[in-house]
Length: 95
Image (tube, rainbow, N blue to C red):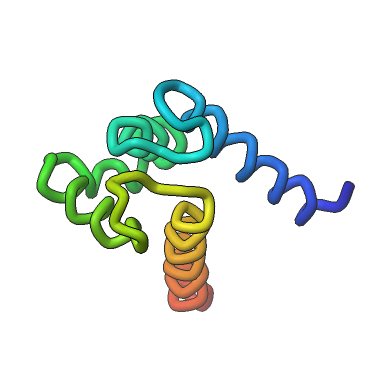
């Protein structure tokens, strides 16, 4: 597989690693999303230390209002973080 194909498989596997812990195996509960962020995005998790920030993040991702994060909503999060990282590296590329 190509690097991009491997990256896609990894994203899917990571989502299911956490979504299968409790409840609907196709959706992340708030606690599962928090665990995922803490373990898979340690630098990002420093910004999400308090419950209010986590609640706000979950609310912004939960497009259908079911208090869970499905794969499409999760991909919105991954896309947002990736775009931010790309912009950061572009700005600091010349330093």
